[in-house]
Length: 451
Image (cartoon, rainbow, N blue to C red):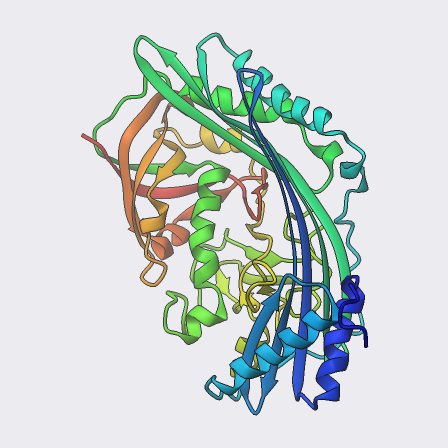
């Protein structure tokens, strides 16, 4: 074996498994990841920051006598394979035993997904810079009250993954996604308000850069003149972006790891009603067009759609191989990897609250007096174990079924289970913000604290 020979991805992971078998390693896994990232920030039509980053490496996980070891390298030669495997074995010897460490078997079928956009490599850098400029132009020209570009960027990621293990798994995949971010400040009579928009897609042809700019600008303009109103208990209609923010907290609570560690408000509630009958929540790693869709997860298990809440009833939790072994069930394909530098963790993929049948406008018109919540502040302070939250809130007051006064400086507080129980309308406008998706929803009788 030529230790200095550089290997391509599939050869690299195969070489790890070959070496592991030669050394009689009980269980071994090799994970290769190559990523290319592009970020272009513009302001006033000029490129303010341009970043092109590339990273590639190999992670090796071993299980020997019930002990897990992990090591990684950015070297791509056969010599690096040997050294990394030896380091993983050394780490395993120093680890504690755990009977639930396991590696998955090969599956008969994997979902067929179109997750790679080859056209990204054919579009010039100057054309991509122009995409960012178009986002800014569409926002700044939306209204003369739009005064400042706070942030505008075009982003893209292209990646290649290979995974193999001693159980017989040998898989490769390529993918990409791209998108834009915009934030503008509108001003009038000394009042300044910010609006934000983001959109990421799998295919460049699906990216509407003008829409990103216009949405951010319109959100800034509509909040001009925002007031702080008196405390009221009213129906609260939540914008999809706000609902997606709440889902971020819920995703961790619906993981089997959180349940097993006693850190989930959903522990012990499978088969019970945890939300109104209007609420359906799922995680779908095989969703067509999903930003985190992949034919297999970070361990080589096929991805799938996992129903977590159906008709308000808790159906189960997200699993990787470890948590599944602990509970005596099958993995849901939710082993996720941040990079080759660490072993797979348990996480959500395309996590969403399913669309309902109501049009958003109909929900607003049918509300009478209420609060249309468009922004929450402090979601990181929400407690995923108890479900309690107290958040800064901004939006638009609803009067006689119409959006009227912009409102800022309010507070909404409560518990996520109470909030889910009070959902009485779900919109048909399911929209994804990267990996979290939600439609408009209405929550009956929440206290909106103000003056």
